Figure (cartoon, helix red, strand yellow):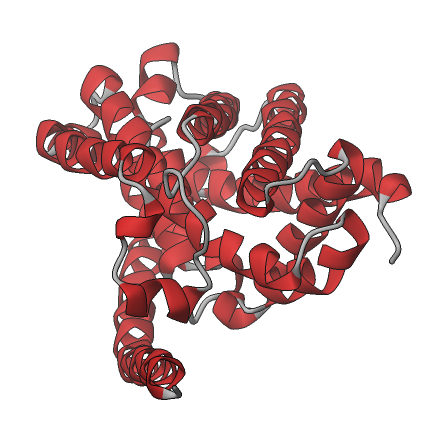
Length: 313
């Protein structure tokens, strides 16, 4: 009678062991990449080359705030499909916005903890709110990869963007198949051990069909932010468009870097590789700092806008 729970516990234990083993290796690689990228920026710094259009920087906050709202609404759609019950739009969005601030905790553990803690307030089981993080992440990353590489293939003109763009057909095809499987394959077909380990229950597609479309629009808001903030540093329309896809891929890589809170450092290093050929080293460093600050400001703005509707159990 206890064999299946024991098997689920073994799966979770094995996953934790793999995670603990990989974390120092990934952290070391991330640190090495960040040091390499920023060392190149510092050696090529020229303060006279920096001229920021602050009106465009302010405008770049708009797509980030709209994207934060959209991502929260997409999570509401996901969690009510998983729970099989309607949830309040504003309270669920407020909980999501609060969990987004928690991603600045190293290891990304804050996101599921906040959602599970507030699950009762929106009328869903804590287990559903916790497992929703995994389902959301699969669609979030896969769709982001498709949109980011598609933009690089369509608009990439710089050396780095063009190089990454050559891989776009392969990456878009592979990730497109992943997204298709997520919205077509019934969750009941997932291995029993996997379903028990991550609390995946019920029937229906693992990812609701509307979720990837919502995530695609969300990532386009990041491309819009990237376009505006790059243009603010002096890039022309073609140059700003060329690196807009990098502004999608960089936060994905940063998010997957478990050791870095909110991908700090890793995201900026990836962005620098795409920005330097377009705007130069000094403006690129300015864009990195401005974009990081704009992201934090947008997260706080979304949280403040939704906080009055925060549910209390």
